Image: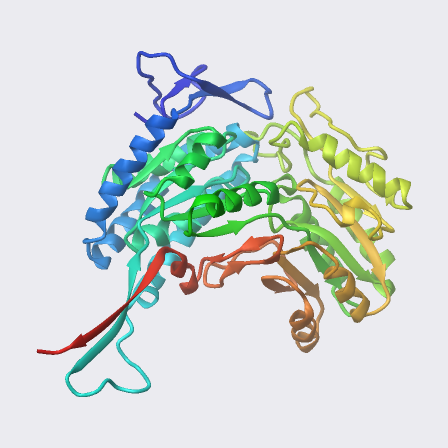
Amino acid sequence: MLGYLKSKGATSSLVRRVNARSFASFAVQNPYTLATEVEVAQHSSKESADILARVKKAQREWAAVTLDERKAVCTKWTDVLSANIDTIATDISRQMGKPLGQAVGEVKGTIQRAKIMISLADKALAPTTSFSSPPEAGLFRQITKEPVGVVFVIAPWNYPMVTVVNSVIPALLAGNGVLLKHSPQTPLCGDHYERTLHEAGVPRDLLRSVHCTHATAAALIANPAVNYVSFTGSVRGGAQVHAAIGATRFIHSTLELGGKDAMYVASDADVASAAAGLTDGACYNAGQSCCGVERVYVHRSQYEAFLDAMVPHFNAYHLGDPMEQDTTLGPMALASAPSVLSAQVADAVAKGGKVLTKAAKPSETHDPTGRGRFFPPTLVRDCNHNMDLMKHESFGPILGVMAVDSDEEAVHWMNDSSYGLTAGIFTKDIDRAKRLGQQLEAGTIYLNRCDAVDAYLPWTGVKDTGKGHSLSEHGFAAFTQLKGWNFKLP
């Protein structure tokens, strides 16, 4: 049984059955229809602990499986996922509102990332047997990378498949078990992971999806059977997870938290290309991306031309049913989002900003049929750092733009943030990009692009963006424990 789910109608592809017992549950609201998409029965604290114990047992057996066998199973999983793209994408769209085409792209991106991590596993997990100084005669030394045990993955709703693969595949390849708690907005995606991995040949209890309260999640973190926590979510949530670990445990964690990603359009930039790319970076997935563009600084010599080029792109979005092919902007997943966004825009206008897009006073809106919980794409000019729009995470399709007089001023304001996930420069001068990139406080530096994740590179950040890293060959380190072998040979 997957997650003890029961349906409110034939709205999802998963078969849902419940035990004949009383249970606590929560409803998932479709952000377009605003109706209940599915009702999900929560696992109790005892049920969650029992599931964790089964994952722990399965992990001990999995640790003895060879890396080649683990790679084969994970590769098979990418085939299973490929056969389920439409099914999973439909569930993504119905749970959190992403346009179906973008949801399909997310599942395909999940497969691509998994394949890259599988290809890196041999190098990343290989033992160290060569040292600068050889051991003395009769001695043997090596360093192996052992699994940490059970990885507790707490996953977000905004990219409910592709963010999870960052942890799940390297954790499994390294010999770990996984307990997956998905966001209550996208619980079906946790069950899709469990179902498809089992179909691919992963032992039944090696990865389990659990639906539980925050209190139960905290109890799981405190459980000695959990050996690592991988959390993606808000700064507040990350602080709570960090505190829960520190209260009773000495285990490690990865915390991927907020962002206020900044871009600079330099004096020599291709304005048309920058405008198109940065619009997409700000509004893709309705702006609900940790690495979405939320601030843009433009050299004054390009300022007016850049804004003129941006406005048509912002106004071109079609708000509508995520299941329809012509929809380019879906609804906001969270009911609280529109009020936060409208407050940021109002604050910016009160402090001198000017809205350039269709809605002069943007607020929650609907599509032409009267359905959905949308926020209109909103571009604000003449911004400054007294505005919430330029300081606090927005997580929506709004963008503040500020003029600067030099590269140095751009770097100053780009670094004036509590966050540091990504940053970038639009320029024709690669040396300029490298020079400025060295000064920018961010985990990834872009040139002439934005909002793109390369699985061959580490995904990390600084400041309140969190701690640790995922992806690349370095993304395996979190899920391994070094063991030194110091033998005197017989």
